[in-house]
Image 1 (cartoon, rainbow, N blue to C red):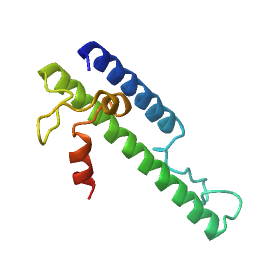
Image 2: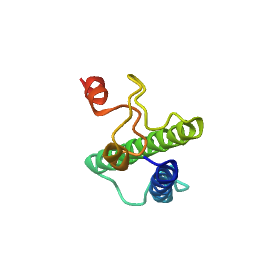
Image 3: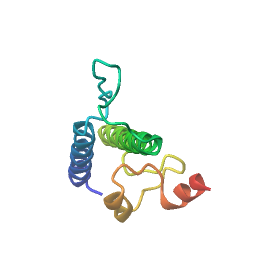
Length: 120
């Protein structure tokens, strides 16, 4: 894959992930529930199942945010490989990664064969 096309794909992927991260953060993932002066979290009683559901949803959102941040880091590493001239080469065998794979997974660092080996 041409370096300029690769850089454009990586930049687009970085922008997409950054927007997703911002959207998740805008949903106040890092805010703590506010207590009123009585020490209660709400004026209405909350059923334990509702509290558990809220906790589950919050944990799920944190998990998604962590995954997005990991993918952003992979894109940053791919940009570094591009700058070093090693982008598009498998980390294991050194062979070229197929252009269609890089178009689909711009931060790919393994060829299809070695990716399959890594997943098993």
